[in-house]
Length: 400
Picture (spheres, rainbow, N blue to C red):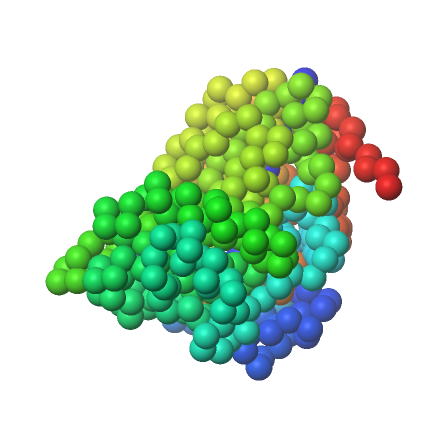
């Protein structure tokens, strides 16, 4: 009985989405966005030399088929990634009407999103008055702060001092279907923040807002504020059983690494480990060594997206890719003979693109442990089907 390791490189898109013209960053459609190709081109042109230099160097991922997958998806030039693949490789296309974390992950796990997400308008204030009254009441406060679109670091600079004076929670959103609440871990209290997010989440979920996110921070007005690793996402539950449920229903273990437990509302999940990507890579290596026969390990490495894609940091994104490649190269030899390790992504976040939002792109599908071969263009849901077939389990059929 083999094991499966499904690893998501969060936001490492490869261009070519056929409906990219219907998704936008501001007024600019995502047509032509290509996270991987544009990073590779910037590296070769010498425009990504902060902390690294030269062409993008991903020998392990390229050998699995990353460069070939990008050319298949978009026809783009990917300088430095020209290896003949030794893994099984292809490109996957999403059908859900979202370029966000839940949409991508749920569809990778076999369940396309059947509804349109609610997005808050980019205006001041962004949120309806009755919602903010509910948040203030749940927090036991006289009001809330910010209440519009913004980035996490800018929000703390703008409202950190007022939060320390008033104790009011800082509420903000982005181009994603999210409602985020930031509060000081000591002044406001971490448990109180988590309780607030848990209490208000059903209201947001009823509006088809994908996630309520607790964003705790520490620091002082004089020294500045820093977000901590105690973020917690309260995601709307998937509308049908996912790959995680299929594996759990078969009596197998499902090990979540990173955001996976939050994304799937812990449905079908046996256990979770969290932390920065460097720690998560150690946990992935541990699970390759220790995970039970027939188990699924589902991992998300988010820092490509959170630290570099949204911040449009091309060199940082390139450094993260090269680090990830070197780490995976050490893990692959530890796989057992009947294991499958499948590397993919959930959407794009082209750091060369206008704006700060995700970009609508196809994603790579790279499989180690299954020989060499081209999958061609496949659906996101085909990834769940392939993992399930490897584990010898059947999808759970939902009857209406």
